Length: 488
Image (tube, helix red, strand yellow):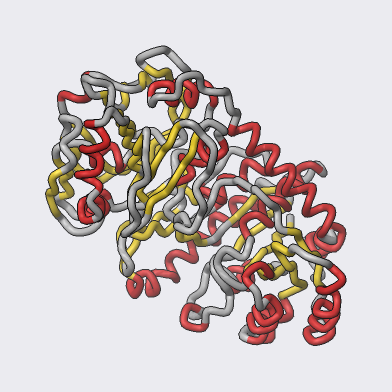
């Protein structure tokens, strides 16, 4: 059994995709491999096979290994609820709510969960590819670290450092990060990967030669920039992300401050008949056929933001002109008459008025609903598969006209005129049959079948093919074999 850790010079350096690529490459070679992320901070999450919750990027890496996601793969998940506080999830279950200082003091306890989960994976797999979080050189966060070198030291595993050349300054990133590590951590760093390179390799070679001479560490690979890569993202969406173009159905999504599981919209980004646009603070709403209110980690506060931005009036105007509205999870809750959070489970205790488009009231209660589900659309019997992650319980007469029949329960609501729809289901566009049925319901005359799940598998293979072509995979395997040796 061996563990290798991939760390990055910054957030979004490409650690997640490198881990996914390594996992798929090793799986294709017949290796029993699993991903592992000790600590993650993200609002995109997935429901695991054991009924827990982990970060979405780790769940994608599990799929790259041919595995069902498991809570041991991401034992600490932090879901931000404000700029200073987050919900803390340990081994898939909600532990509580903490501000940054409280969590810093809690790290010793969190480390016990991290090491227990790692040891559980050790007993089941030949290889663990672990992923760091942010940068290992954050001086203010080094004490009690469990996300990067703190874990690597405890697990006694080798580390590869990834730098993003597309941002510029990659040599400063790599050298500066290395310089800020302790001597034992520097020795643990076995090499560099330069990510997202585009250009003439001959122009980069002198810099690589200097880097290896200066640090004594090898550059194990230079990975090219992959145009059009579309895979489950870990963090909140970047508002500079350009809208998709050319589709006949215009779908607009408000980019809520605490938007969660925006991966719900990846299949729509892929769909040739859909133009998808995220709209941030202060941006005008473009022409829309459909407005989709996304999930939210803090429904009441995001609802207040929505109103401050004038979306309540814009939605009413949109409906008067025959437009459609779909709410997903927190967005579904916002469509109702009231959102109540008497115990402050998602922030401060409050009761706020909803948009009043569906006759229902949502109350936040302890005990998060976490389940993978499948069923059919009530209207036409199209198959649907997805997952639920929410605290709220909704009640009201709108629920008498559900959107989905999930076998064990009915889900969602549809207004009498069919213009307003809501559901607790995430991932509802992932499967092409449900995607076609929903797009038809939302106004697309003849939706084309688009198989997003098949696309995701092709993208994972594309990642692995690229990694095998541009990374010294044999050096990586040697690191794993050396790491598994009792004499290391």
